[in-house]
Length: 144
Image (cartoon, rainbow, N blue to C red; front, side, top):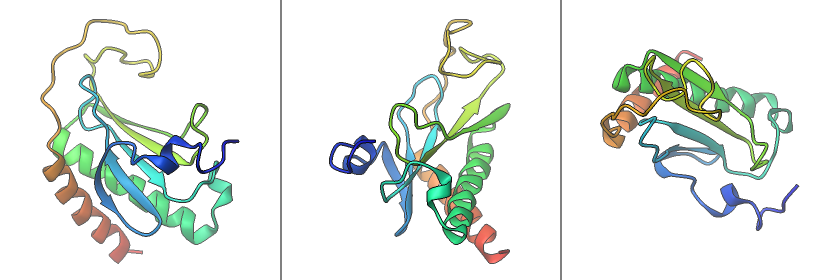
C-alpha cells in the first residue's frame, strides 16, 4: 500500500471540491461522458470501510447518499451507480456516477468497453449540485 506521500488522493483533491468537512470531501469529476460524476474522498489515508469506526462509516455513507440524492435532483439520470473500488488508488473513496440508457457503456460499468458513441451532455453545474447536496446532507443529518 502506498504511503500518504505517494497516494494521489492524499496529495490532490481528486476534482473540483464542492464541499468538505474534517473527515471527507465531495469533488466534482471532470468527465464529459458522465457529467455530474462525483467522488467522496476520505481525508485520512485508509484503504477500506472497515478501517473506519461505526460513527465514521455512518458519516461517510450519509455523504454518499446526499451526493446521490443531489445528483438525481440536478441531473435527472436514468440510474445512479455507486462504487467503492480503490484497486488503482487504495485510498477510501466512493464514486457517484450518473447513468443514462443511451450513455456510452449502458447497461455495463463505465470502466468497460464502450457499447456506442458518446452523446453530448451539458456539463454539470457545480453550484447547483453543491446547493442540492448541502440541503440534502442537512436533512439527512437532522433525521439521524
